[in-house]
Image (cartoon, rainbow, N blue to C red; front, side, top):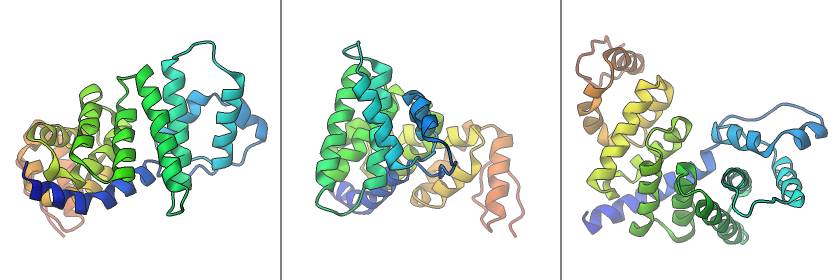
Length: 252
């Protein structure tokens, strides 16, 4: 990888990385519930919903973490609890992230929580991706941090909900990635198509992946023809014909 490529990717990608960590949660949690509901809802359910894109009021998340920590844990390294605690803490970080002087301290705290969680659960792709984002926000996009992104793909190559923000962030710095990692990123995009996540795939295809559309199209032969056709039709409705092999569309 040429240093010029990496520098260029760093300059164009850091904003997308910031958007990624701020945008892992995209669906607003708007239910009006009683306080007892928040106390009774297990931490694991909070975590699962956050990973799937829901957001919760910060005060409720902080209350849930406080109650959980006050209850204590008889197991020194509980993998499930480590994952759930880290996910909820990262959700709080996203909601509170700003340009204030406290940002560095928040990032440092979240980094430590993620690192501790990974020591209990090193096979968690969400945590590896989060560590990559946090370190890039703290110190800037650096070559050594790409190994965290690579680990996320190694331990979780087929992660449905994680694939969306991870793929977007990876394409934002695509030239900085090794050829092997670039191949994993393209495979992940094809997974979005196989999973029929067309709206998300189109957003990435026309956004972060725009400079690399030809590489994506050349690898879409592994995607079932039905999925390719539906993807091409939806692009055609936007006035775009990506010339995907095996498809036929009318651009309007």
